[in-house]
Image (cartoon, rainbow, N blue to C red; front, side):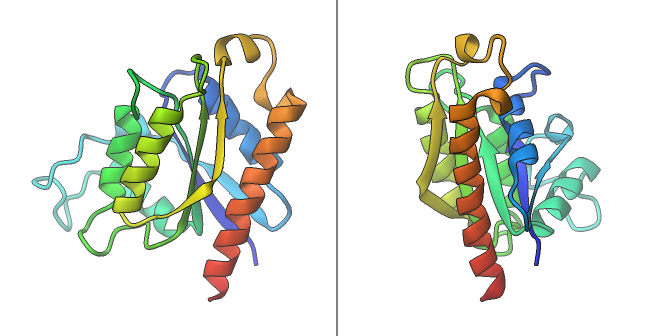
Length: 187
């Protein structure tokens, strides 16, 4: 059985190091796992219950929900914006938390990782994302973490997939999400 892990990136910038980290995850997925990088977070309107009405949910939000429902687990890549989670990632969590009591997370495993320029690699934002997604219904893998500091210098000339230390750590993260997702799917 193949396990599908949906990757959401909290940065919209084309050259984002977190996007590069997500691209590395796609390449490093072990046999039996598929990491799918979701495209389109920029197109999703801010969550508003007035537009979250059956039959008229915005197409971009419906696409996100469909991708999430078809997934067995999640891998979030979060930079840190002013000490917290980027709005685009929080908005995705909000859309996936609804409809109330039947959101797309459905207790599926979620790991939050990322990189940032600061010395702590974005841990504040990643902690905020874990908190939010846990409240939204995801099964947060609290012991599965990867915060890579100094992104601007570390990845200035090297893609994360070509950084042996990062590739090894990211491979371990994916393997852990894969394992949890496989257990949940088998139960």
